[in-house]
Amino acid sequence: MTGPVVWPGEWVAARLGVELADGSRPVGAGLGDLVGLAVRRNPKRAHLLVSAVLGKHVPTDPRLVYGAGLLLGGLVRARLRGEPVEPEHGPALADALRGAPGAAAVLRDRVREPSPPVDAVVLGYAETATSLGHSVADALGGAYYLHSTRRPVPGFATYGGFEEEHSHATSHLLLPGDPEAFERDAPVVLVDDELSTGRTVLNTIEALHAVRPRRHYVLAALVDLRGEDDRDRTRALAARLGARIDTVALAAGRVELPENVLEAGQALVEDLSRQAPPPKPSRSYPLTHVALDWPRGVPDGGRHGFLPAHRTRLEKDLPGMADAVATRLGAGCSRVLVLGFEELMYAPLRLAEALADALPGVDVRYSTTTRSPVLAVDDPGYAIRTRLAFPAHDDPADGPGERYAYNVSSAFDRIVLVVDDVGDTVQLAEGLLEQLRALAPVLLAIVPSHRREA
View 1 (cartoon, rainbow, N blue to C red):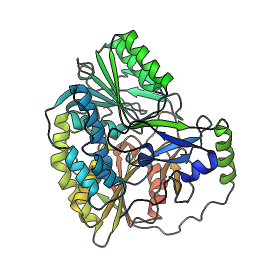
View 2: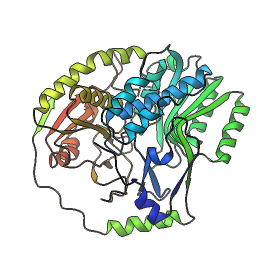
View 3: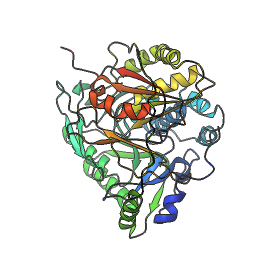
């Protein structure tokens, strides 16, 4: 299957005047290779960079998603070890981005070759970068991983919080199950999908440093869009703290915006929102539950901490879980979507990756639901073609609200929805599941949410 002929940012570029300017390309990919564009339903920011390798808004080969995360982890590894960055995997990434047959698996297999473990504490940001941070930690081999969360969990004390100023839902929590593991004397790697100004990560460094000073911090992102003033702020903070702050990204550059982009974006949203929505399908395909036999003692993700030993145990059991899903899929399917939800990204990603390996003749894709409200436009030059809106189903601390799944359509002949048991609610059955069942037969896989042991 070949990649898109039209860049999925042309529609926004033509109507809002948004332009991407390339900077450094350490692995050979530019901004336009790694992102498309969409329009936010958000008064603070008009545009959304839609990643081609994150697996959030765009269903993507899971081996490309994991491979890109491991590739970013390789850049972090080189920086921590003081080694030069060699763009040796650039051709494999380019082939995978354009959809060359087998290229995504080749990329993943090349970048996950065993190397001496590197000790670090890796922190990923909810919700978008939870799986990306996991992948970076995997690439280091010896890292402790924690991601921020917007879900308070009984039994876990809040370590700290910070604010993501441009976000539609700004409250982040850190809930490490073992604060001593999080505070140990090791470099801290902060992972996000994009660095726009860098304020969030700098705020985090300052808050963490006040509790437990470190000598070395690394900011890691798929794309780095900071301007020179933003970089000056990073250098100034490093000098004030007496610490080293490095930055790595798969690609750098800048987004050039016209002066009236916010007003133009809001006008565009209002105009297109007045159009009649497409008719909803009236069918209701079957729902099947599949038992994953999740390994006992392995957390569902990094909300409370994730260790290399957890990953080793998970990878041992992944083929069996993938076989269970493949058996329930049955014969005759050609396109399968594995859909995670919000912060639960890593478990569905690794399951999708194992499923893709187990079903070589099937096009397996991976994406997750999100809190981000985005305009959908069914145009090949636009990154968000379809939009499902449904009620929140995981009892969020900020109350009920809408959640979204993008680019999920009847083009898939099977959908595997992976949620944790906290999210397996009546709201799920009456909301997202009902909409997915209008598109294709659905397999529901439940992962046990990590809880404090008595």
